[in-house]
Length: 152
Image 1: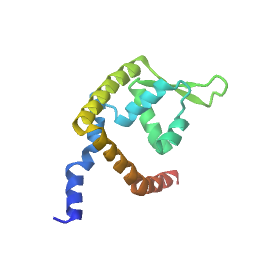
Image 2: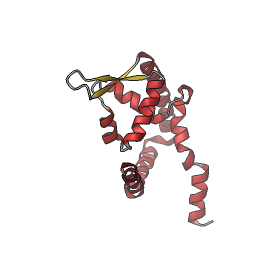
Image 3: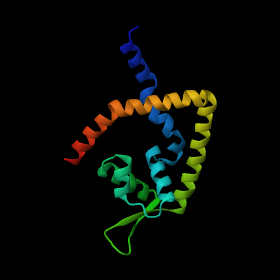
Image 4: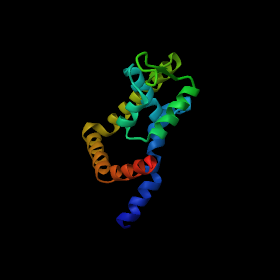
């Protein structure tokens, strides 16, 4: 079996499902893992705006806007105008959003603990290093190209 074939098999059987595995703790609430992370950041920072997410998450403004709108429709967060500048909107988590965020966080922590127990810290760090290296060398270039196209 050659390397390309083995890589293709690994992708088909594992890599394309990683997002599903990571997102599973949020599935019961019909939100993505990225939306869970958004709720977490909103809860941690009362002065957060949509622009902050665009800068930090390396996602397009349109992608962030869609996720925020979906969270608003589900009454998990609201946008509140800044007193000094009404054009500036702060993102605020609702009581229901905070409740769901805490449940998902507990599930994520449990899952992460299971992974650490299964792999051990040394192997987990090796996996993380490989993912970061792959991101630097390949994923970041593709992401930048996509974001540039979204901006046009």
